[in-house]
Amino acid sequence: MLSDLDDFYCFALVVEHGGFSAAERATDIPKSKLSRRVYNLEENLGVRLIQRSSRHFAVTDIGMNIYRHAQVMMSAAQSAHDLVDHLSEQPRGLIRVSLPVSIAQHEMTKILPNFLKQYPEIKVQLMVTNRRVDIINEGIDLALRVRSSLDDDPSLVIRKFENIEQHLFASQAYLNEFGSIKKPEELSNHRILSMVDEHTDQQLVLHDSNNKSIKVKVSPVVMGSDLLMLAQLASENCGVALLPDSIVEDYIKDGRLVKVLPDWNAPHGIFHVVYPSRRGLLPAVRVFIDYLVEHLTKR
Image (cartoon, rainbow, N blue to C red):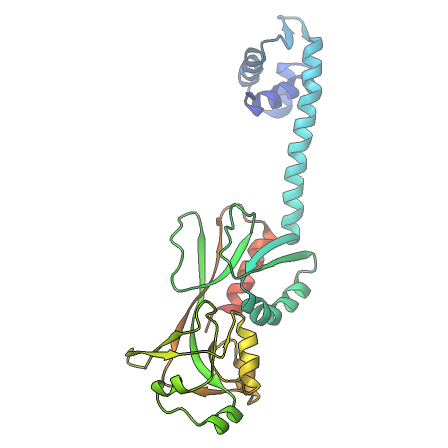
């Protein structure tokens, strides 16, 4: 078992300055503390490192060997401090980020270019997946998530962006061909594009402005968990899709999609970021989190 590293540090100082008194004058560390630390090190190692007398100071052969190792340890510790100081001057280095496919394809493509210009020495490694990632055990710096409820893990820090709602969307050409939809029950007779891919017989659960809910049985013609794919298919007149509002912004602006049953919606989830701890965050991670909060928080 390793002794206290401070013992090695104090021993190296004593050897470097040629004695306890000289080390005290050079470092302002009391001679009594230096002596106690060196004695502790000798006791733990079971060897004599310094020959002491009132007029004589000498380092033993094994003491010199230990001193050389202590120098290496001190150099490594200084390098670690220098590394952090270097990172603190200008955010730099690699950030590992986990995020869902739809967030990567939509939000991230919009905000990441400017971040990379602002911080040219930061590299971003994106783990694009819809599975729940264990950010601590998998070495992830932060994860973007959309969940119906927030994590209650005390080891995680959570920053909430917004609540995302879903609405029904279709192309105007589809509605012209298959008929407009006046009430939720009529969805059963329409071609539905669903993100749920486990079952062919499904239910849509919708809420009105008074939070009244209704369940509608549907049999989707396309099922797949890629939201942008469903949005594109809906814009190509393939059917009606329940999609997050944030995904279809551009489709609505240019008229490729229109909202169906605008008074009815379904919660998609809480858009947020999680990361392990507020303490000890590298500057690159900290500025990225701040950037996400600035650009993704709903105002």
